[in-house]
Length: 405
Image (tube, rainbow, N blue to C red; front, side, top):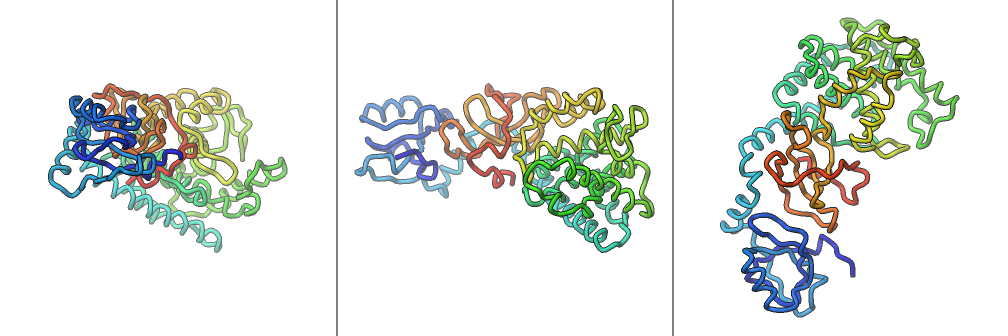
């Protein structure tokens, strides 16, 4: 019989017995996953006790049949106290975490509103109506405020995606990333607002692309790709008569497929003909597309996406801006999945500006032992652990979505 994390229960050391199959122990207030095995003698229990172990996780199905299990009552005051003291990193950052929780909830509301707004814009376009930017600008003001207060919260929420909502989520994510990028570059608030508006509407022309091509679960043929490229022509027609739309927003919408060497579309602009806002949108659009699950491919990790962005410089993308974008969102972006050197997997929960390779990680799973762990906040700035690798969510054997809350 194979090990299944669903079969593990937490038991106090005083209640364990010979024949139980231990999958993890709690030692010195930390969970250790490197001690899996069957308790074969009373001496084994004594050894755990002298080592300071108070609790263990036991797989019921792999334990002997005569074993009697008494799970820890998580409602007792003693257990609550243990849970609160178990992870010093989490305790140290509790005040920050509560603040993040508030911003996290606010970010979820903003993202939900943005998806509704993007859908409304697509519907208006489909019905032949002229887009009204007032409502988009009001949302953009809220996004800018959120980014200025805590950009990590918005970035973490926007990382949670669904494959069948790509067009909406891509528009929202491009808008949010552009605001964060613009903030990093020191752009003023009015410009950040215009970037957000441009991001939301940048793919509006796809509403007129043939659905069979737009949602084709395979590589497009040359003829199909030429049809797909028309979405930029359609976008130009759609936004032509939109009142109050700034030049910056138009640049984002109409230039995110241009290339510095002139081989982009729809106009084949070259070099300095592409303003900074257009160059920014090219980078952000490609990055978000690479890291998202699509109908024809799995999303890749941020590290893999960065390599591709760098490979597209200097002929397609602005090299200086690409490096600044990577620095902006971090080598391990908030909301991305990483694996620590002890096998634990977690979500990058907050960034560390002074030490970019040492963010705070919300761990919830062991890839090594294929079992869920207690949810633990690990601040790598003060911890001995380090990130082993970035992981694409699609490569995990479990669904990480519940742990984004």
